[in-house]
Amino acid sequence: MHVSVTRKGVGALLAVLLGVAAGASPAREATGKGEGEPQSTSIYFVAGFAAIFDDLQALDRLFEVDGIPAKAYPPVLWRNVVRDAVDRHRQNGDVTTIILIGHSVGARKVYQIAESLSRKEVPVALIVGLDPVRKSEVPDNVARAVNYFISPDVAFVVPGPGFDGQLINEIVADIAILAHGDIIYEEAIRLRAFGEIRQAIASPP
Image 1 (cartoon, rainbow, N blue to C red):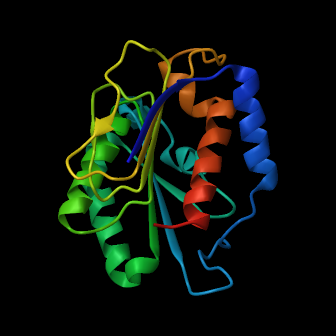
Image 2: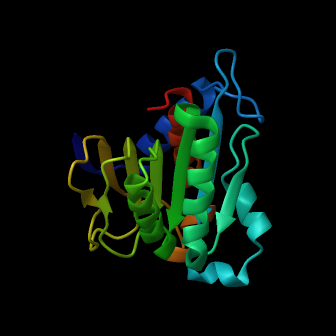
């Protein structure tokens, strides 16, 4: 298990982001299949409570990566994500790559989703938390969890029982983010998330 808490300057962060973006090649096409065995990637974005006033289709496009669509949900519908992920895993088995992204309260919900999936023996390749508002535990079915926090005065995400993956809590307050609600639109953060998503797709657990 690897756990770290970091604080990066904007220059160093952008250097990493641009390097990942420039060097990455899509592991799958929009159909979710690569040159080898068929693969299936499901990206879910659980927004904060403010999403009830937003266009969910517009939020879908925020985390679409290399033609692989993301599906946005308000936090009250987190159980729908569980059902869909379970269905996809049953259809595709071990070739399913499940990626969960959450913002604000939605970042808390993605850990609840992962916990529910753990009870159903469904693995999660990646969780990306965008300024979570409450302490969460990473369950044992998650391969990697990365959380970006605006404020250092938060309850960081911690390993849950049996977790043996990678956990990173990163403070990004030095990036020009206007407010908690804007982190999902901040280009530097989204590029970082894209790099994580591409890595999870290229190297599924």
